[in-house]
Length: 472
Image (cartoon, rainbow, N blue to C red):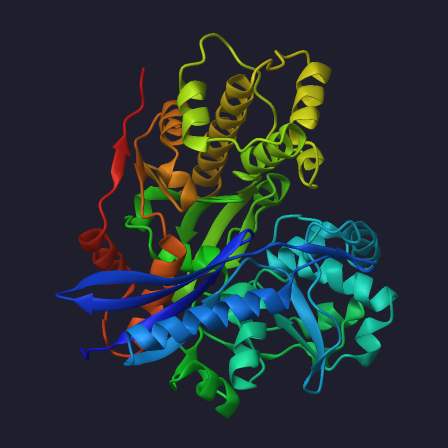
Protein backbone atom coordinates (compact mmCIF):
# COMPACT_ATOMS: atom_id res chain seq x y z
CA UNK A 1 0.00 0.00 0.00
CA UNK A 2 0.99 3.62 -0.57
CA UNK A 3 -0.27 6.87 0.97
CA UNK A 4 -2.10 9.66 -0.76
CA UNK A 5 -5.50 11.13 -1.50
CA UNK A 6 -8.01 10.85 -4.33
CA UNK A 7 -10.97 13.04 -5.26
CA UNK A 8 -14.46 12.15 -6.45
CA UNK A 9 -16.66 14.34 -8.63
CA UNK A 10 -20.11 12.94 -7.91
CA UNK A 11 -22.86 14.36 -10.13
CA UNK A 12 -26.43 13.68 -9.09
CA UNK A 13 -29.69 14.59 -10.80
CA UNK A 14 -30.30 17.53 -8.44
CA UNK A 15 -26.83 18.41 -7.11
CA UNK A 16 -23.14 17.68 -7.41
CA UNK A 17 -20.30 17.39 -4.94
CA UNK A 18 -16.53 17.07 -4.83
CA UNK A 19 -15.16 14.85 -2.07
CA UNK A 20 -11.55 14.15 -1.11
CA UNK A 21 -10.80 10.70 0.25
CA UNK A 22 -7.79 9.62 2.29
CA UNK A 23 -7.07 6.40 4.15
CA UNK A 24 -5.82 5.76 7.68
CA UNK A 25 -5.37 2.30 9.19
CA UNK A 26 -7.61 0.74 6.57
CA UNK A 27 -10.50 3.18 7.08
CA UNK A 28 -11.68 5.88 4.70
CA UNK A 29 -11.82 9.54 5.61
CA UNK A 30 -13.99 11.80 3.44
CA UNK A 31 -13.99 15.58 3.26
CA UNK A 32 -16.61 17.34 1.16
CA UNK A 33 -14.88 20.36 -0.37
CA UNK A 34 -17.52 21.47 -2.86
CA UNK A 35 -21.28 21.32 -3.39
CA UNK A 36 -23.27 22.84 -6.23
CA UNK A 37 -26.78 22.73 -7.62
CA UNK A 38 -27.82 20.85 -10.73
CA UNK A 39 -30.71 22.80 -12.21
CA UNK A 40 -31.83 21.68 -15.70
CA UNK A 41 -32.90 24.34 -18.17
CA UNK A 42 -35.53 24.45 -20.91
CA UNK A 43 -34.51 25.82 -24.30
CA UNK A 44 -36.16 25.73 -27.74
CA UNK A 45 -34.43 22.35 -28.13
CA UNK A 46 -36.21 20.97 -25.06
CA UNK A 47 -35.16 20.06 -21.52
CA UNK A 48 -31.36 20.10 -21.15
CA UNK A 49 -28.68 19.78 -18.50
CA UNK A 50 -26.83 23.00 -17.67
CA UNK A 51 -23.45 21.44 -18.47
CA UNK A 52 -21.36 24.56 -18.02
CA UNK A 53 -22.85 25.36 -14.61
CA UNK A 54 -22.00 21.80 -13.57
CA UNK A 55 -18.49 22.18 -14.96
CA UNK A 56 -17.97 25.45 -13.10
CA UNK A 57 -19.16 23.85 -9.88
CA UNK A 58 -16.91 20.83 -10.35
CA UNK A 59 -13.88 22.99 -11.13
CA UNK A 60 -14.48 25.15 -8.06
CA UNK A 61 -14.67 22.02 -5.94
CA UNK A 62 -11.50 20.59 -7.47
CA UNK A 63 -9.63 23.82 -6.74
CA UNK A 64 -10.62 23.39 -3.11
CA UNK A 65 -9.56 19.74 -3.27
CA UNK A 66 -6.01 20.63 -4.36
CA UNK A 67 -5.84 23.41 -1.78
CA UNK A 68 -6.86 20.99 0.98
CA UNK A 69 -4.86 17.97 -0.26
CA UNK A 70 -1.98 18.80 -2.63
CA UNK A 71 -1.14 15.08 -2.84
CA UNK A 72 -4.35 14.23 -4.74
CA UNK A 73 -3.26 11.44 -7.08
CA UNK A 74 -6.32 11.15 -9.27
CA UNK A 75 -9.84 12.33 -10.04
CA UNK A 76 -12.82 10.09 -10.76
CA UNK A 77 -16.18 11.25 -12.14
CA UNK A 78 -19.54 9.52 -11.79
CA UNK A 79 -23.07 10.58 -12.72
CA UNK A 80 -26.48 9.31 -13.74
CA UNK A 81 -26.65 7.12 -16.84
CA UNK A 82 -27.86 7.36 -20.46
CA UNK A 83 -27.38 11.09 -21.24
CA UNK A 84 -24.56 12.29 -23.49
CA UNK A 85 -23.20 14.94 -25.83
CA UNK A 86 -22.34 14.52 -29.50
CA UNK A 87 -18.95 15.76 -30.67
CA UNK A 88 -17.25 16.65 -33.90
CA UNK A 89 -13.52 17.02 -33.47
CA UNK A 90 -12.95 19.10 -30.36
CA UNK A 91 -16.37 20.73 -30.43
CA UNK A 92 -19.66 19.71 -28.86
CA UNK A 93 -22.53 19.81 -31.31
CA UNK A 94 -24.97 20.55 -28.47
CA UNK A 95 -25.23 20.39 -24.71
CA UNK A 96 -26.73 17.17 -23.29
CA UNK A 97 -30.47 16.67 -23.39
CA UNK A 98 -32.29 15.60 -20.22
CA UNK A 99 -33.64 12.05 -20.11
CA UNK A 100 -37.03 13.41 -19.01
CA UNK A 101 -37.39 15.40 -22.25
CA UNK A 102 -40.44 14.29 -24.22
CA UNK A 103 -38.51 13.67 -27.46
CA UNK A 104 -37.56 10.12 -26.44
CA UNK A 105 -40.97 8.63 -27.32
CA UNK A 106 -40.40 8.86 -31.08
CA UNK A 107 -37.01 7.17 -30.68
CA UNK A 108 -38.65 4.13 -29.12
CA UNK A 109 -40.86 3.57 -32.14
CA UNK A 110 -37.93 3.91 -34.54
CA UNK A 111 -35.73 1.41 -32.68
CA UNK A 112 -38.43 -1.20 -32.14
CA UNK A 113 -39.39 -1.01 -35.81
CA UNK A 114 -35.84 -2.08 -36.66
CA UNK A 115 -35.20 -4.49 -33.78
CA UNK A 116 -38.04 -6.08 -31.78
CA UNK A 117 -37.73 -5.65 -28.02
CA UNK A 118 -37.32 -9.36 -27.28
CA UNK A 119 -34.28 -9.44 -29.56
CA UNK A 120 -32.96 -6.24 -27.99
CA UNK A 121 -33.17 -7.85 -24.56
CA UNK A 122 -31.21 -10.88 -25.68
CA UNK A 123 -28.51 -8.57 -27.06
CA UNK A 124 -28.22 -5.85 -24.42
CA UNK A 125 -30.04 -7.26 -21.38
CA UNK A 126 -31.68 -3.93 -20.54
CA UNK A 127 -35.13 -3.31 -19.16
CA UNK A 128 -37.35 -1.07 -21.24
CA UNK A 129 -36.91 2.55 -20.27
CA UNK A 130 -38.00 5.05 -22.93
CA UNK A 131 -34.97 7.26 -22.32
CA UNK A 132 -32.23 4.65 -22.80
CA UNK A 133 -29.43 6.06 -24.92
CA UNK A 134 -30.20 4.08 -28.07
CA UNK A 135 -33.69 5.60 -28.18
CA UNK A 136 -32.25 9.09 -27.75
CA UNK A 137 -29.74 8.42 -30.53
CA UNK A 138 -32.58 7.34 -32.82
CA UNK A 139 -34.01 10.84 -32.32
CA UNK A 140 -30.62 12.33 -33.21
CA UNK A 141 -30.60 10.27 -36.40
CA UNK A 142 -34.06 11.53 -37.37
CA UNK A 143 -32.88 15.09 -36.75
CA UNK A 144 -29.72 14.66 -38.82
CA UNK A 145 -27.38 15.22 -35.88
CA UNK A 146 -25.57 11.88 -36.25
CA UNK A 147 -24.52 12.79 -39.78
CA UNK A 148 -22.28 15.52 -38.38
CA UNK A 149 -21.02 13.69 -35.28
CA UNK A 150 -17.81 11.71 -34.92
CA UNK A 151 -18.13 11.00 -31.22
CA UNK A 152 -20.56 10.46 -28.36
CA UNK A 153 -19.59 10.88 -24.71
CA UNK A 154 -21.76 9.94 -21.74
CA UNK A 155 -21.86 12.52 -18.95
CA UNK A 156 -18.93 11.30 -16.79
CA UNK A 157 -16.77 10.66 -19.86
CA UNK A 158 -17.71 14.12 -21.15
CA UNK A 159 -16.26 15.59 -17.95
CA UNK A 160 -13.18 13.41 -18.40
CA UNK A 161 -12.79 14.82 -21.93
CA UNK A 162 -13.08 18.38 -20.64
CA UNK A 163 -10.29 17.63 -18.15
CA UNK A 164 -7.96 15.53 -20.34
CA UNK A 165 -9.02 15.81 -23.98
CA UNK A 166 -9.36 11.99 -24.11
CA UNK A 167 -12.46 10.30 -25.52
CA UNK A 168 -13.41 7.05 -23.80
CA UNK A 169 -16.50 5.18 -22.64
CA UNK A 170 -16.32 3.61 -19.19
CA UNK A 171 -17.86 0.16 -19.36
CA UNK A 172 -20.43 0.25 -16.53
CA UNK A 173 -22.04 3.37 -17.94
CA UNK A 174 -21.68 2.15 -21.52
CA UNK A 175 -23.76 -0.87 -20.49
CA UNK A 176 -26.75 1.44 -19.94
CA UNK A 177 -26.75 2.73 -23.52
CA UNK A 178 -28.36 -0.37 -25.03
CA UNK A 179 -25.50 -0.62 -27.53
CA UNK A 180 -23.19 -2.85 -25.49
CA UNK A 181 -23.35 -6.62 -25.98
CA UNK A 182 -24.41 -7.98 -22.59
CA UNK A 183 -22.32 -11.13 -23.03
CA UNK A 184 -19.10 -9.93 -24.66
CA UNK A 185 -19.24 -6.47 -23.00
CA UNK A 186 -18.11 -4.90 -26.29
CA UNK A 187 -19.97 -2.50 -28.57
CA UNK A 188 -22.61 -4.34 -30.60
CA UNK A 189 -21.78 -2.75 -33.93
CA UNK A 190 -24.30 -4.90 -35.82
CA UNK A 191 -27.06 -3.56 -33.59
CA UNK A 192 -25.86 0.03 -33.88
CA UNK A 193 -25.80 -0.28 -37.68
CA UNK A 194 -29.36 -1.61 -37.76
CA UNK A 195 -30.70 1.39 -35.86
CA UNK A 196 -28.57 3.87 -37.79
CA UNK A 197 -25.90 4.75 -35.22
CA UNK A 198 -22.52 4.97 -36.99
CA UNK A 199 -19.69 3.00 -35.42
CA UNK A 200 -17.45 6.08 -35.54
CA UNK A 201 -19.35 7.74 -32.66
CA UNK A 202 -18.68 4.85 -30.23
CA UNK A 203 -15.60 5.61 -28.10
CA UNK A 204 -12.89 3.24 -26.89
CA UNK A 205 -14.09 1.26 -23.88
CA UNK A 206 -12.22 1.39 -20.56
CA UNK A 207 -12.76 -0.51 -17.32
CA UNK A 208 -13.12 0.90 -13.79
CA UNK A 209 -9.65 1.56 -12.42
CA UNK A 210 -8.11 2.26 -15.84
CA UNK A 211 -6.25 5.54 -16.32
CA UNK A 212 -7.92 7.90 -18.79
CA UNK A 213 -5.28 10.62 -19.04
CA UNK A 214 -3.61 13.62 -17.39
CA UNK A 215 -4.99 17.10 -16.99
CA UNK A 216 -4.76 19.39 -19.97
CA UNK A 217 -2.28 22.23 -19.29
CA UNK A 218 -4.97 24.90 -18.88
CA UNK A 219 -6.88 22.63 -16.46
CA UNK A 220 -3.78 22.02 -14.31
CA UNK A 221 -3.10 25.76 -14.24
CA UNK A 222 -6.67 26.61 -13.23
CA UNK A 223 -6.80 23.95 -10.52
CA UNK A 224 -3.38 24.61 -9.09
CA UNK A 225 -2.33 20.98 -9.31
CA UNK A 226 -1.82 18.06 -11.64
CA UNK A 227 -3.36 14.61 -11.46
CA UNK A 228 -4.67 11.77 -13.58
CA UNK A 229 -8.28 11.12 -14.38
CA UNK A 230 -9.10 7.49 -13.57
CA UNK A 231 -12.20 5.63 -14.73
CA UNK A 232 -14.40 4.52 -11.84
CA UNK A 233 -17.80 2.86 -11.86
CA UNK A 234 -18.90 6.01 -13.64
CA UNK A 235 -22.56 5.05 -13.61
CA UNK A 236 -23.34 6.26 -10.11
CA UNK A 237 -25.14 3.04 -9.20
CA UNK A 238 -22.10 0.98 -10.17
CA UNK A 239 -19.98 2.98 -7.71
CA UNK A 240 -22.73 2.86 -5.08
CA UNK A 241 -22.94 -0.94 -5.25
CA UNK A 242 -19.18 -1.16 -4.60
CA UNK A 243 -19.86 0.65 -1.32
CA UNK A 244 -22.69 -1.64 -0.16
CA UNK A 245 -21.27 -3.52 2.87
CA UNK A 246 -22.99 -6.75 1.86
CA UNK A 247 -22.42 -10.42 1.33
CA UNK A 248 -23.41 -10.43 -2.32
CA UNK A 249 -24.45 -14.09 -2.40
CA UNK A 250 -27.30 -13.52 0.05
CA UNK A 251 -28.27 -9.84 0.00
CA UNK A 252 -30.12 -7.27 -2.08
CA UNK A 253 -29.32 -3.58 -2.42
CA UNK A 254 -31.39 -0.47 -2.98
CA UNK A 255 -29.46 2.59 -4.13
CA UNK A 256 -32.07 5.16 -3.26
CA UNK A 257 -32.09 8.76 -4.38
CA UNK A 258 -34.03 10.34 -7.22
CA UNK A 259 -34.35 6.77 -8.49
CA UNK A 260 -34.51 3.57 -6.49
CA UNK A 261 -32.24 0.95 -8.07
CA UNK A 262 -33.30 -2.38 -6.57
CA UNK A 263 -31.45 -5.61 -7.25
CA UNK A 264 -28.73 -8.15 -6.58
CA UNK A 265 -25.18 -8.63 -7.78
CA UNK A 266 -24.51 -11.66 -9.98
CA UNK A 267 -21.57 -13.22 -11.79
CA UNK A 268 -23.49 -13.47 -15.08
CA UNK A 269 -26.45 -11.71 -16.70
CA UNK A 270 -29.96 -13.13 -16.33
CA UNK A 271 -31.54 -13.12 -19.79
CA UNK A 272 -34.59 -15.32 -19.32
CA UNK A 273 -37.99 -14.51 -20.76
CA UNK A 274 -39.22 -14.11 -17.18
CA UNK A 275 -36.56 -11.45 -16.52
CA UNK A 276 -37.54 -9.59 -19.68
CA UNK A 277 -41.24 -9.75 -18.83
CA UNK A 278 -40.50 -8.49 -15.30
CA UNK A 279 -38.60 -5.59 -16.90
CA UNK A 280 -35.34 -6.30 -15.05
CA UNK A 281 -32.07 -4.98 -16.36
CA UNK A 282 -28.52 -6.36 -16.55
CA UNK A 283 -26.03 -3.52 -16.15
CA UNK A 284 -22.28 -3.72 -15.89
CA UNK A 285 -20.69 -3.76 -12.47
CA UNK A 286 -17.16 -3.28 -11.20
CA UNK A 287 -14.78 -6.25 -11.60
CA UNK A 288 -16.96 -7.80 -14.29
CA UNK A 289 -20.00 -8.31 -12.07
CA UNK A 290 -23.57 -7.80 -13.26
CA UNK A 291 -26.02 -5.52 -11.52
CA UNK A 292 -29.33 -7.33 -11.99
CA UNK A 293 -31.89 -4.76 -10.97
CA UNK A 294 -35.11 -2.88 -11.56
CA UNK A 295 -35.51 0.90 -11.71
CA UNK A 296 -38.20 2.18 -9.34
CA UNK A 297 -39.26 5.83 -9.54
CA UNK A 298 -37.62 6.58 -6.16
CA UNK A 299 -37.65 9.74 -4.06
CA UNK A 300 -38.44 11.76 -7.19
CA UNK A 301 -42.08 11.15 -6.21
CA UNK A 302 -41.60 12.92 -2.89
CA UNK A 303 -39.25 15.67 -4.08
CA UNK A 304 -41.50 16.61 -7.00
CA UNK A 305 -44.53 16.62 -4.67
CA UNK A 306 -42.72 18.99 -2.30
CA UNK A 307 -41.61 21.16 -5.22
CA UNK A 308 -45.27 21.50 -6.29
CA UNK A 309 -46.40 22.46 -2.79
CA UNK A 310 -43.63 25.01 -2.40
CA UNK A 311 -44.35 26.54 -5.80
CA UNK A 312 -48.09 26.77 -5.21
CA UNK A 313 -47.98 27.71 -1.54
CA UNK A 314 -44.96 29.97 -1.52
CA UNK A 315 -43.65 28.38 1.68
CA UNK A 316 -40.72 26.05 2.19
CA UNK A 317 -41.59 22.52 3.34
CA UNK A 318 -39.66 21.16 6.34
CA UNK A 319 -38.92 17.60 5.15
CA UNK A 320 -37.96 16.07 8.54
CA UNK A 321 -41.11 17.53 10.11
CA UNK A 322 -43.23 16.26 7.21
CA UNK A 323 -41.81 12.74 7.54
CA UNK A 324 -42.35 12.78 11.31
CA UNK A 325 -45.99 13.70 10.76
CA UNK A 326 -46.30 11.04 8.04
CA UNK A 327 -45.05 8.41 10.49
CA UNK A 328 -47.92 9.32 12.82
CA UNK A 329 -50.66 9.01 10.20
CA UNK A 330 -53.29 6.59 11.48
CA UNK A 331 -55.44 4.41 9.30
CA UNK A 332 -55.08 3.11 5.79
CA UNK A 333 -53.59 5.28 3.06
CA UNK A 334 -53.86 4.66 -0.65
CA UNK A 335 -50.98 2.76 -2.27
CA UNK A 336 -50.24 3.47 -5.92
CA UNK A 337 -47.97 1.89 -8.52
CA UNK A 338 -44.69 3.78 -8.12
CA UNK A 339 -43.55 2.42 -11.50
CA UNK A 340 -46.41 3.91 -13.51
CA UNK A 341 -44.95 6.09 -16.32
CA UNK A 342 -47.52 8.78 -15.52
CA UNK A 343 -45.23 9.87 -12.69
CA UNK A 344 -42.14 10.29 -14.89
CA UNK A 345 -42.47 13.90 -16.12
CA UNK A 346 -41.94 16.98 -14.01
CA UNK A 347 -45.09 18.77 -12.93
CA UNK A 348 -47.94 18.56 -10.43
CA UNK A 349 -47.17 15.28 -8.67
CA UNK A 350 -49.87 15.48 -5.96
CA UNK A 351 -52.55 15.92 -8.62
CA UNK A 352 -51.31 12.88 -10.55
CA UNK A 353 -51.11 10.74 -7.41
CA UNK A 354 -54.63 11.74 -6.37
CA UNK A 355 -55.97 11.03 -9.87
CA UNK A 356 -54.29 7.61 -9.98
CA UNK A 357 -55.71 6.61 -6.60
CA UNK A 358 -59.21 7.86 -7.43
CA UNK A 359 -59.18 6.04 -10.76
CA UNK A 360 -58.25 2.79 -9.01
CA UNK A 361 -60.80 3.18 -6.23
CA UNK A 362 -58.26 3.73 -3.46
CA UNK A 363 -58.24 6.29 -0.65
CA UNK A 364 -57.06 9.74 -1.76
CA UNK A 365 -54.90 11.65 0.73
CA UNK A 366 -56.37 14.85 2.14
CA UNK A 367 -53.38 16.34 3.97
CA UNK A 368 -49.69 16.76 3.24
CA UNK A 369 -48.66 14.11 5.83
CA UNK A 370 -51.14 11.66 4.26
CA UNK A 371 -49.67 12.33 0.81
CA UNK A 372 -46.15 11.76 2.16
CA UNK A 373 -47.24 8.55 3.89
CA UNK A 374 -48.92 7.33 0.69
CA UNK A 375 -45.71 7.98 -1.28
CA UNK A 376 -43.46 6.22 1.26
CA UNK A 377 -45.83 3.24 1.58
CA UNK A 378 -45.99 2.94 -2.20
CA UNK A 379 -42.20 3.09 -2.53
CA UNK A 380 -41.75 0.48 0.20
CA UNK A 381 -44.21 -1.82 -1.57
CA UNK A 382 -42.41 -1.34 -4.89
CA UNK A 383 -39.01 -1.94 -3.27
CA UNK A 384 -40.14 -5.10 -1.49
CA UNK A 385 -41.75 -6.46 -4.64
CA UNK A 386 -38.63 -5.79 -6.72
CA UNK A 387 -36.44 -7.52 -4.12
CA UNK A 388 -38.65 -10.61 -4.19
CA UNK A 389 -38.61 -10.71 -7.97
CA UNK A 390 -34.84 -10.17 -8.17
CA UNK A 391 -34.31 -13.08 -5.79
CA UNK A 392 -36.68 -15.39 -7.68
CA UNK A 393 -35.23 -14.60 -11.11
CA UNK A 394 -31.55 -14.69 -10.11
CA UNK A 395 -31.58 -17.47 -7.53
CA UNK A 396 -29.86 -15.21 -4.96
CA UNK A 397 -31.46 -15.83 -1.53
CA UNK A 398 -32.04 -12.46 0.12
CA UNK A 399 -31.46 -12.47 3.87
CA UNK A 400 -30.74 -8.73 4.20
CA UNK A 401 -31.64 -5.63 2.19
CA UNK A 402 -29.07 -2.82 2.15
CA UNK A 403 -30.33 0.70 1.46
CA UNK A 404 -27.65 3.22 0.54
CA UNK A 405 -27.79 6.80 -0.69
CA UNK A 406 -30.07 9.58 0.49
CA UNK A 407 -32.95 7.17 1.08
CA UNK A 408 -30.98 5.50 3.87
CA UNK A 409 -31.70 8.60 6.00
CA UNK A 410 -35.46 8.14 5.60
CA UNK A 411 -36.27 6.06 8.68
CA UNK A 412 -39.91 5.59 7.74
CA UNK A 413 -39.00 4.28 4.29
CA UNK A 414 -36.39 1.89 5.72
CA UNK A 415 -38.78 0.52 8.34
CA UNK A 416 -41.70 0.09 5.95
CA UNK A 417 -39.44 -1.65 3.42
CA UNK A 418 -38.35 -4.11 6.13
CA UNK A 419 -41.97 -4.65 7.12
CA UNK A 420 -43.18 -5.30 3.59
CA UNK A 421 -40.19 -7.43 2.53
CA UNK A 422 -40.12 -9.44 5.76
CA UNK A 423 -36.32 -9.27 6.07
CA UNK A 424 -34.00 -6.87 7.94
CA UNK A 425 -32.92 -3.63 6.30
CA UNK A 426 -29.47 -2.16 6.92
CA UNK A 427 -29.21 1.53 6.00
CA UNK A 428 -26.00 3.33 5.04
CA UNK A 429 -23.66 4.72 3.96
CA UNK A 430 -25.41 7.84 2.70
CA UNK A 431 -22.64 8.93 0.30
CA UNK A 432 -22.27 5.44 -1.16
CA UNK A 433 -21.66 6.62 -4.72
CA UNK A 434 -18.74 8.83 -3.70
CA UNK A 435 -17.39 6.09 -1.43
CA UNK A 436 -17.32 3.57 -4.29
CA UNK A 437 -15.78 6.16 -6.60
CA UNK A 438 -12.98 6.86 -4.09
CA UNK A 439 -12.33 3.17 -3.38
CA UNK A 440 -11.86 2.27 -7.05
CA UNK A 441 -9.40 5.13 -7.48
CA UNK A 442 -7.54 4.23 -4.30
CA UNK A 443 -7.17 0.64 -5.44
CA UNK A 444 -5.86 1.79 -8.82
CA UNK A 445 -3.30 4.01 -7.05
CA UNK A 446 -2.16 1.22 -4.73
CA UNK A 447 -3.46 3.03 -1.65
CA UNK A 448 -5.74 0.06 -0.85
CA UNK A 449 -5.88 -3.40 -2.33
CA UNK A 450 -8.26 -6.33 -2.55
CA UNK A 451 -11.27 -7.59 -4.44
CA UNK A 452 -14.81 -6.28 -3.99
CA UNK A 453 -15.15 -8.10 -0.67
CA UNK A 454 -11.99 -6.35 0.49
CA UNK A 455 -13.28 -2.95 -0.59
CA UNK A 456 -16.58 -3.60 1.15
CA UNK A 457 -14.67 -4.52 4.29
CA UNK A 458 -13.21 -0.99 4.23
CA UNK A 459 -16.76 0.36 4.06
CA UNK A 460 -17.84 -1.80 7.00
CA UNK A 461 -14.88 -0.56 9.08
CA UNK A 462 -15.54 3.06 8.23
CA UNK A 463 -19.32 3.53 8.41
CA UNK A 464 -21.97 2.64 10.92
CA UNK A 465 -25.28 1.33 9.60
CA UNK A 466 -28.78 1.49 11.05
CA UNK A 467 -30.68 -1.79 11.28
CA UNK A 468 -34.44 -2.13 10.88
CA UNK A 469 -36.14 -5.40 11.78
CA UNK A 470 -39.46 -6.33 10.18
CA UNK A 471 -42.44 -5.81 12.48
CA UNK A 472 -45.01 -8.57 12.61
